[in-house]
Length: 280
Image (cartoon, rainbow, N blue to C red; front, side):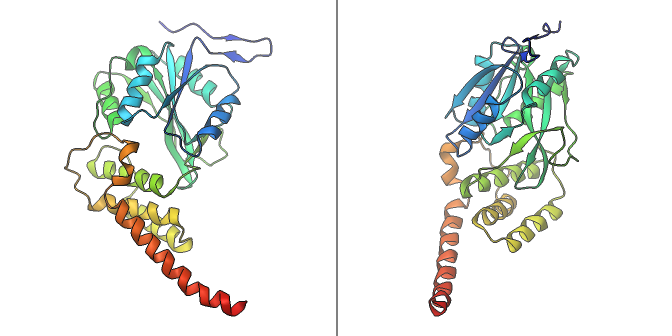
């Protein structure tokens, strides 16, 4: 049985408080307040819950299942800046879908990659609460596989979308620092090597990351490139738990790369100093 249709105000604003809970997962990142501000500007009303500093990631996801009291819930990471129609659109798509659709995925535009990615997710709580997350790398992917094996459906977006497409639910990755962007691409490409996610051609991607760094040799582009490369060098057979922000400083190669980057920057700065002095 489908949940009842939502109420609307006299101005036509959907009242979804009895239908949808939006959960924001945060570790105090630089875009957290911007994420909340974008949620305040949604064109519908809903329940808002914050999952703060819960680790590993599987535990944060599981807390959403356990705390949810509505038929649907939306999972928002603090680095997602949603457009005003995002929450309503995601709700409408799952609310109108057949009951065997457990999850709808929305497209976000990743500003670093310059393309659409799968990102925003809304869940049918009555279904996914029967599929708890486990503390293993890619816990969400494992949950999806169990859902699909039991006959449920996941609706996914097209990804051949321009940034201004109405199908884009918001922006992703606007507040990376060196550590978070390194973790992002290290984790992503490790999952690609393990065959747990769909990804573009690695050969094309590594050249794209390298070209971007050569064009703009910034700290962010360096650590993005190094995350991709390190993912190819690590032992993917070693068992891993789910992502845990408390261990990001201990990611394979991160400390060494930090030291290398600082040494390179110091050398560049020391070479630039005499030229600047001569100009002055």
